[in-house]
Image (cartoon, rainbow, N blue to C red; front, side, top):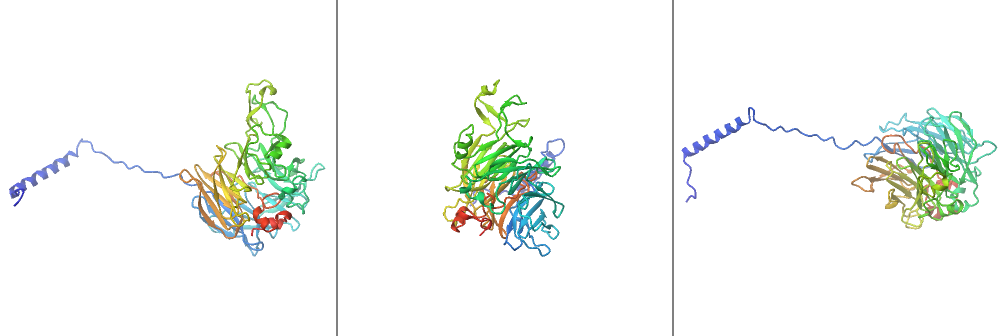
Length: 553
């Protein structure tokens, strides 16, 4: 039985004709003046392209074996190219490395008394890319500085600065740092203008015996007896030395601001910063006076970083919160976005974040209790500006020994290489990298990395950043990613050839050049390649030699 009667053949024909007529009617309805919707595809441009910036790592495979340079891509976290320094039969282990201020050429000092320079080559074609020059057999070069043109080195032989030019680098002349009856000895570091458009470069001398004092400033027990150091200006146009300027004890590092207005010398021996006004080539000192801006000016020739330093020269206006008994500054970076100097305090286990703004006329900029004061006495106490200090403890252990610090280009965060932050207590574990929020002045997290990190650097493109940490005792490059979706996590750890002696980045913001163009060798007050725990386990720390400080294993 059927529930519905069957449609007759004649009925089915009528339905078919009706359906065809409906289709024709619908087809015609789409023609003529009737509206017809048009679909326009919308194409996305995709994310912003990543900058052509690179991390450059130089590694040692042994004192008498070729060193290796590795070029790491910012966007791909991969080694694009690598090569050894073996050219024409010359084989040597690198001991110092830096990158020029353009970010285009690297330089190494090698164990066989040669200098190597190489262009940053991402294609893998290295045959004609590595050039080697021999320096005088009597030279005793310590550190390198590579502005946009030429190469400057500190030389213990004759207590001079050696100037090199050409490609490969050829010796041009030696400029003694002794001047005006004063003979600064042991020149260990150079900082200053990134190009010949500046007026001067500055040489840091520790005033120690050249051959016996190479690790004097690595031992805190020596700090009380240490003499004051010297800072010698070298005029770029004439290659002559100006009278030296006194610094604190055991000066180990210096930072020139990009605008060439101020220089900061880090004195590990007395936990201070010597501040130089490079406009006038003298200490940043003055009698308080009414500046061209209409505001009263206070100068700051010395800035204390520890309680011991405060006891000697006085406290900063905002007090001593967070300060430790000692500091031991060994490295610093200046951030132009925030006008702050961020200092790694190796002996204190902290970083010091110091506000160092200047006004449009080149004066230290401060605010006061009374902003409309007619006399300096009526201004009252300083309430902000130059010399404001925030001290932040980093790491997980009591003595993490931050060996360096790097600051993102936008000034939002700092990252510290905590060389001795090893919970094993005997150097068999590993160190860490601490992430510091520079708005709240607090540590956000501390990340374990392979080995005991001595150097940390970064590249930031807008909100995306990569942080690179190397440990002289580990063959890995740790890469930390920071972005809106990934908050400071290990992105990868790349296996290198050999053990890294240092790392630099071609640009800190993916656009302009390199701000870090001076090398930083172990010894001379700078952290050794091994951590304090490792040195103590080997019985080195009490009577440390330079060779022991340079050891990586």
